[in-house]
Image 1 (cartoon, rainbow, N blue to C red):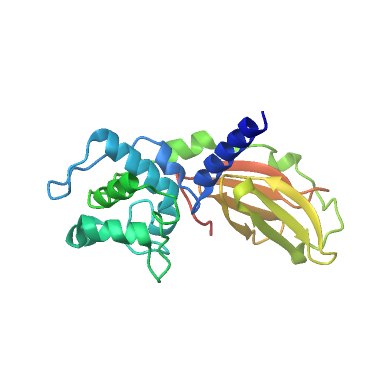
Image 2: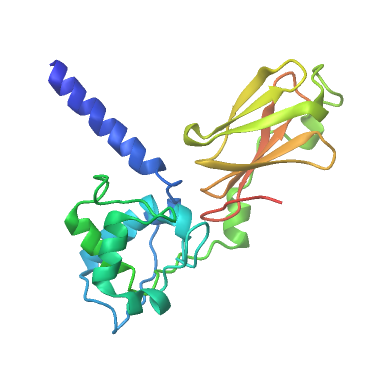
Length: 240
């Protein structure tokens, strides 16, 4: 029983780790258009789908959804085809001094997965579906109407000295009273929270996660409260 419990716990932890590694992109779970590239190494449809999922779990956080680069370098065929499969396998497997993880020697990928990713990176990046105005408006949830919100501040917190701390893997933000150094409230928000921004009035905090879900937190309540949400896209990094 003890060994079985350990195995189950390890499997759960491994799954959770994969879901959050490098800020796993939610784009990996949506249908995407695949562009064929005659110059790229052959891949079956099943291999392409497996590699696509691995990319969005392990790589998109640094190299971007369309592989055009973010904190990591671009990984488009314009570069990767010239590098070739063997070079890419070595780079993926053993990493680099510049910050590229060593996916093979760390045990994150096996040799088959390294080969799969080396071939995948020479294909044209799959294109995510459009998320337009109709989708955005359909996702809008007005939790508390403006007229039903507090007419005055219902707390004694100095809102000019409140810190919004990202709890990324928990999908939450912690609002900390800078005067007392105490946690004022923890608010559930979107997946893999990235950025918090205070409104010009100082009353609201905008919070956005990698899933493109934007939460509006009202700080005039006794406890910070989400009063509206909107999904602005399939993936996001910031709100301005």
